[in-house]
Image (tube, rainbow, N blue to C red; front, side, top):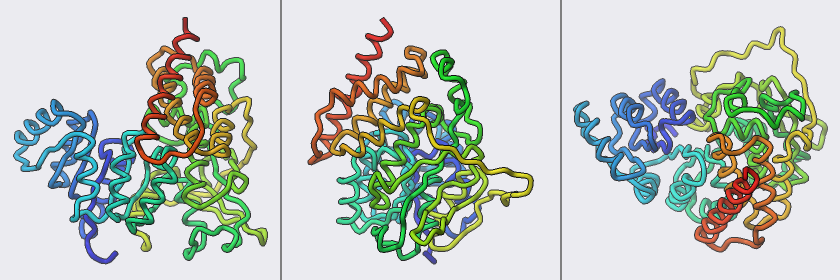
Length: 395
């Protein structure tokens, strides 16, 4: 895109949003920020508004909106403040927006991402749940709306970079044998299994390589994060479960690989910094500066391990949900969100996360979703099932 891109950043105050705006600030001639959204970090949102001067700022409720209006007025900023899910859908679909960074964590990001797809936007997808919960419906919306979908997860972005530029959704026609998703293994990769029952939220959030939010950090520790990425890869690259393999790579230098039929393995390497995939997607098909330092390969060792399902049961649950299909991936995601929230709140143990997700999956009704309402209902039921299981387990 040679002209200036008009951006909407959904989830601007989170890790992905902050890194997006860091890259954007390095290229003022390329990008214009039209709209920003945030949930609770109003002071950070105001600081972003001061720097980027969007036309719209969106928060989740009326009380936060009024507080934000007062803070923006005090900063002498004339920015229209909106609130609620409908406002998120509005800014994601508005005609003046070219590109939407979809970085709202969790199921809350589903509706605005869907709105961007229907409106034919270039979507930089950092929200896993959009594809995990509603992969079929979302990909249909992308096709129907003529939207362009670029993955932001470092792993899927690495695969995107490692596939042929002309890739059209047919792995076999591109000579691809397997997609190899790398995973760091998180902070508990070598911890004795017996010790996992007593790990704390702070320990689970101490990722060895990446700086992430607490929920995503816990998902990385359990490898549910990688399980969700397996489901994402299925939809993004039209890959069957048998064509996706997870490889533990503790150094987080190789972000993922594509294994070709001729024996070649193409990998994307880089420092563990989300600005690299963000810059690749923002500038695509050009490459632009991201602010990330050059990778120093000297003195490094790169190692690889197979994942152990006894240590990472959430990964197996994700593969099982993808294989069975229907609404089970949405159930998997919702139950996991409820369980991780309980763990972070100190009301559930670390092993209870996988156990409660498995319980919710056994209670779920399979079958395809015909609408977002079906998925939202399945999501709500899974949260209830997981929460009830955790309460009973804690009693």
